[in-house]
Length: 398
Image (tube, rainbow, N blue to C red; front, side, top):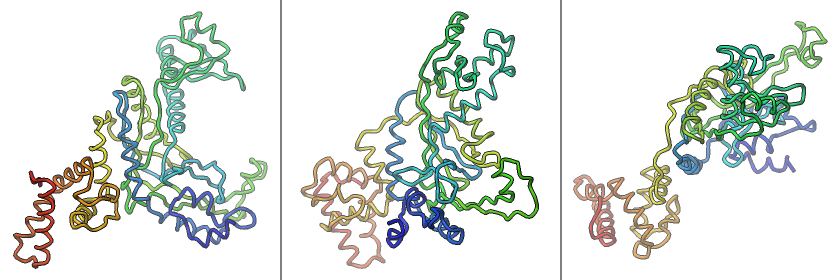
């Protein structure tokens, strides 16, 4: 069945192509001879044009006072989900619906939680919070969960607990007796998935092929029992990564004072540690722009206009002119302009008028009449557009 699907061609969704459409052999792996071309084909897939509208809807969903947004610009390649099962031995996490790069919110939360514990937690992890002295006592507020083998021995410190939440622990009663918060709690900050910013990379092609060449396969497979040598055959493994300079939008929700702190910590962690796989080799590092509160919530009409504008002025103005001439519209405005001008619903006319005024289309039609170089056919079409428009909107509008 899989091989029969290849006759259809490679799908334009990278997630589907990488996971389900791979040209595997009898061993369930993509043959080495085919990997380079296959990965190159996947890297050439552009993001679907409609993704921009979905992204804008998601972005505008953040409207609470404590929400914070910032763009992450990758300084190096990004590899997320490399442990997932894959026909190339290296997995990849891609947005299921749109096939674009994303960083799961759970990965960002885990990164910051580890960063806070390791960077700001106490130096002597063997001491309990009430045993810490001086500056170490303050650092205990940043300490994460303490484990004893597979059992949770002690819950986290106050700041860690507020940011990320806490589980029940064996020493909860002892913590409460000494005035510390204890017991299960939900974190105050929500770390949302970071989504690819449309158009942030050339040709909207955010993926690139990469290769990892293992030179000491026997040494690694034996967990060090076989000594490394100079005569093992190199084992190149091809896989996909996200290109440097791609931008992803980070989003946090929660009380303002806590999202501001979480944003600063996330920024530090991404710039110094990186996120995802192969961070020890420099992958997953990026620079975070300024954290901003969400824009004021727009009305449905304003949102509809913003979504239409993602298709560009030329496409929209061309469809408006077709509609005014009585021709069918088959592009992004097909639903808005499905009826003839005289039968178009009032709420649709409002949106059309906003676009015509924003793009100054009536002025452009008038300029065609004044253009001495324009032929009579173009002038006649411009005159007809103006007459139809003025009948719809006697007040004019540019």
